Structures are given as C-alpha cells and as structure tokens.
Image (cartoon, rainbow, N blue to C red):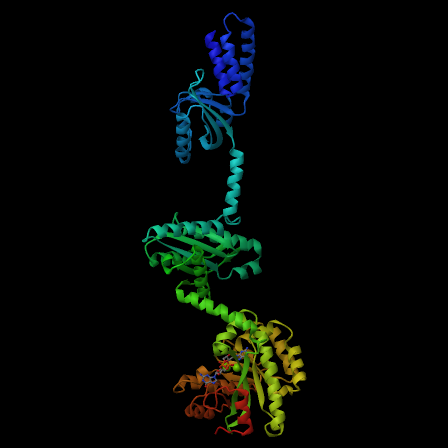
Length: 606
Ligand code: C2E
Ligand code: MG
Ligand code: MG
C-alpha cells in the first residue's frame, strides 16, 4: 500500500504541481485505516496517470548523471522510441553534438541547485536519425523523496524552428541560385577581416565578377534563359572553389567570391583564371548554346581598407577597370585605381554642370586647300575650360560625356556656337564673296543616329543662325555607317536633302567596307592622322593614302589628310593629289579671336 502511494506521489510530482504534491503529502499522513482517503487517492492517481500518458509533452525523469529513469508514452509519438527503449540510457547520447556543451552547462547548474528550474532548446535524435527540436523545462527534484530526480518536460518545437530557420535562410540567400546573398557575404567578409586583425599573416581576397554579355542575352533570349544562365554560372562558380571559399550573388549578373586563408596574390589569380576558363565553356540552355565571358576585379586584404565593405567596393572598381580594358579579363585593385575613380566621379559631376556654367569653348582648326594654301574650312573642336583643372581636351571628357548621356547636349551646343560663329565671320569679312566655299566642320557622336531628331535639329539651327546649309559639314565616324545601314542611310539622306555636307572622320581606322561607302551620301573622307603623322611617311602608309585618294575620287568624294605636321608630309600629300590638309604644320586649333585674325589677314600657308 505504501509503495502504491509512493508511486502516485511520484507521478504527481512529475506534473510538478506544488499544490498536488502538498495535498498528497498531507494525504499520506492519514492513510492508515482511512478507506475514504484511499478511494480519493486512487481516483487522483488515475486522473494524473491519464494526464501524463495523454500529455502532448514528453515528461521524463533523469538521474543526476543524465541516465533516463522514466519517459512518458508521448516520447514515442514525438521521438519514435518506446519509453522502455530509452530507460537506462544516458540522455546526452541523443543530443546533437553542437548542443551538448550548452545543455551540459544548464544540466550541471540544475543538478547543483535544488529546486531550480531551467528552460533550454536542443536538438534530440529521432529514432529515424533526423533531429527534432525540443523546448525543455528541467526541474531539480533530487531532494524530493518521492522523485529524487531531475524532471524534464519537453515540447516539440520543430515546426516553429524549421520555419524560423527558413526565414533566416531566405534572408541570407539568393532565391534564384541559392547562393549566399550580399548580407551573408558581408557578414563573412567582416568576420574574415576581424580574424585578419588578430592574425597578421592571415590573407584573404574578394573577387567581384560581372558577366560580359548578360544584358544582351537577357534582352534577346528572354528572362527564362537569363535565369537558367545565372543558375548554370552559379553552379560552375561553386565547382571552381574550395569548400572554405564563399561564392555569393549580389544581384543581376554580379557575383562575388571570398577567398580565405590564401598564401599570396598568385593563389587569387589562379582562382580568377580557373573561373574564367570554366565559365568560358559553352552553356547549353534549351536548344541554345550560350557562350559568355566574365570580367573579374580582385581586391586583396593587403591593399588596406577601413571597413570590410571597402574591399567589396575596391573589387568592384577593379572589375570596372577589367571591363574598360576589353572585358573577359581580371584586374587587381590598387590604390591608384581608387584615386582615379574619385577623380573620374568628380569630373563627371563637374561635366554635368559645364554647359550651364558656360565652361565649354569651341576651338577652330584651319583646313587648307593644298593646291593654293588657302583656308578652305574650319573644324570646330570642343574644349572644356575647367575652373580648377584648366583646359581639358575632348579625348579626356567626351568618352565620359558619352557614358553619362551628355555627348549629344555637348554636340548641340558646339553646333549652335560654330554655326553662329561662322555666320558672323561670313558677315564680318564678307567671306561669301571672297571664299564662298569656306565651311565649318562639326563632329557628331554616334548617339545621334539612334534617334530621329537629327535632321529637325540641324534644320532648326540653320534657321536660327541663318547659315547656308552648304556651309556646314558634319563629321561622323566609320562605325556609324557600319552599324545599321538602312536607318543611318535614311538619316544621312535627309541631311543631304537639306544641303548639308557629310564627311567620314578618321577614315582608315574603323572597319567600313569600302564597297559600302557609295551607298551613303558622303561628300568627303578625312584620312586619319595615323597614316600621315610620324617622322616620315612610311611606304605602306603612302600606298594607303594613295588608294583612299583614288577611291574617293572614283566615288566623287573629296579627301582631307589629317595630322600634317611637317613640310615633308605636306609635299608627299600634294604628290598624291590629296586636296585638303589639316594639321599642326598649318595651325593648331585656336580660339575664335585668333582664327578671326587669320581670316582677316587672308592667310595663305604655302
Ligand atoms: P578629330 O575630329 O579627328 O579631330 C582632330 C584631332 O586631331 C583634334 O584633336 C586635333 O587637335 C588633332 N590634330 C589636328 N592636327 C593634328 C596634328 O598635326 N598632330 C596631332 N598630333 N594632332 C592633330 P582634339 O581637338 O583633341 O579632338 C579629339 C577628338 O575629339 C576629335 O578628333 C573628335 O573626334 C572629338 N571631338 C572634338 N570636338 C568634338 C565635338 O564637338 N563633338 C564630338 N562628338 N566630338 C568631338
Ligand atoms: Mg573631326
Ligand atoms: Mg579626325
């Protein structure tokens, strides 16, 4: 009888309800000869047994060393073991190795403090080998005579944990490729840099990758192909790396790699080369075989940085350098690059304001009729009078203007200014009567031919400045007539119909097919100065110049030789029957005042 009350008491104790324990204890005192009490106890025992057996939680009792003395039946539903399979085993055998330290500490505290309660979360091995997340509350009832054990009440929180883990995973990974995203990458980068601070020999590197033709592929084949390509790239990237390296996708076609514990720069270069080789193999997507290359920027932890994120930025800068130098290559960041980027950004900012601040200037370079030495035309060449940097040449700022979409505005301004100026000179010097063919040459960038407004704009300018259309010659480069001939040809014909003359600038440096030239209403070829300049005109170059001159004549075009610097060059060009010449031998590009003086003086150069 006494044993049975013990048992009931212990079961009740397991419920850890202080009130019940007290009432059982008080009942115990009245047991002998008390039939009514026994009946009450029996009912109570049945009630609590039912509660424990049907509890959704697992209720267990452990010895102070972790040996399992009791498990409630729910252990089978939650962890797959029958209670008797666990009895006598040590609970720690079932705990996830990564959780052991944390749980041992809590358990030790619990064992050492009578009556204490702790709450922990841990992973417990399911009978099928998987891990189940339990939230457990342990109570030290070692001093409790009917229990003398550690009572553990555990709840299955796997669903919540998995949902939490998924949330965390999604927040740190790229949805498309499953690679770590920027947040996870920067976190690892930060950790690497902290480790490097403590270990001076520890080196790491950041690679910044950008696909060279992704936009083209995405636009022409569609987003599904684009996504497939990114997936394939992510896979290949992972295959190129060691398990300790981290590849991430920052977004779009930008990927980054963190190489930790490298020996020197050659390690990084080897990885970059391997990535380039692997990505260069054609990738089969649907029925297409896509070939793509990648530009890589490398930043080494040795280049110095304030924030770990600076390394990412430096690698990005180096990647841009790789793109600028022809793509499909890698560049290693150096501090010069940073200074250049800062300078370039400053220049970009200043350039945006240059027109409204009236900092642009037009210089004019004479073009001379080689037979007589008379002035035949002027080429308008833009300059930028920078308040701090001084006079800046177009070769430095026009490519930037082109990139940031300003080159057409600059051309518009130059056109207006040059037409206005020529009209003024014509009036002032009554040039019309003297040299009726004097023209102004204005350079146009390629962007004009991607829009329809060129003809309208030129027409408007001619009206505003009252310049005769035949006084204006527009210089375009060879690549323009190579790109999209029907449209360009249409636009050029519109200009010809206005009465404008058209010249191909820097002729011979592009890839224009000579056979195509006659399809366009071109009135002049300007032979690039690379064929003319130099200490002596080489034999090969002479042949080219002669061929161009003959070709031009056959097509009814005029020829101008650019870059004449010496009397000897001039002599050769005259022998080759080149009609016009331009170059430092006659004059450098000059400000309008100086040109006006030349015109007034009726300068002749022969
Ligand atoms: P370009 O149209 O071929 O202009 C001729 C360039 O050669 C000019 O350089 C001129 O100063 C230079 N040059 C002329 N004679 C000689 C010579 O004997 N020796 C040497 N070494 N150079 C000579 P600049 O003014 O620096 O212009 C460079 C390029 O910038 C121009 O080449 C043109 O393509 C572009 N550019 C200039 N102004 C404009 C503009 O208003 N709009 C556009 N879109 N481009 C412009
Ligand atoms: Mg030109
Ligand atoms: Mg030129």
